Length: 113
Image (cartoon, rainbow, N blue to C red; front, side):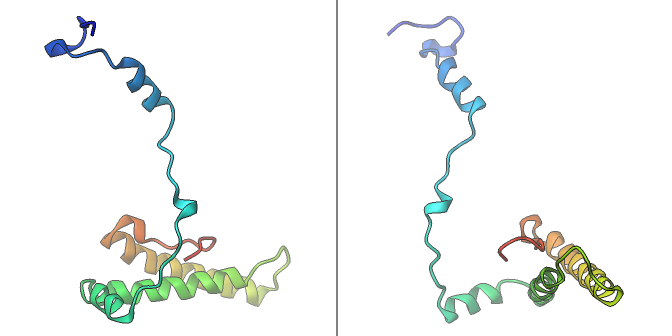
C-alpha cells in the first residue's frame, strides 16, 4: 500500500472517496418502506411523553391542513376565501407551537400528514 504525504499517520489517501461523497447525496430507500400500524398502547405511551399543548397543536394543525386542502380551485367565492384564510391562520398558529417543540413537526397543507 502506498503511503500518502497528505494523509497524517501514514494512512492511504481517500480523497476520491471523499470527493464522491460530497458531490452525490446519500441514497435512501424511503420509498421502499412499508407503513406499519402502531398499536394503541404504544401510541398512548408515545403521546404521554409529549406535552398536552403540543398534542393539541398537532391535532389542530392536521385539521386545519385538511380544511385548507378542501378549499382548492382557481375560483373561490368570498366566503370560501375567507374560510381558507382562517384555516391558514389556524395552521400557522398550530405550526408555531409544533416548531417550537421540534422543527420537523410542522404540518404543510400539501403534505401527506
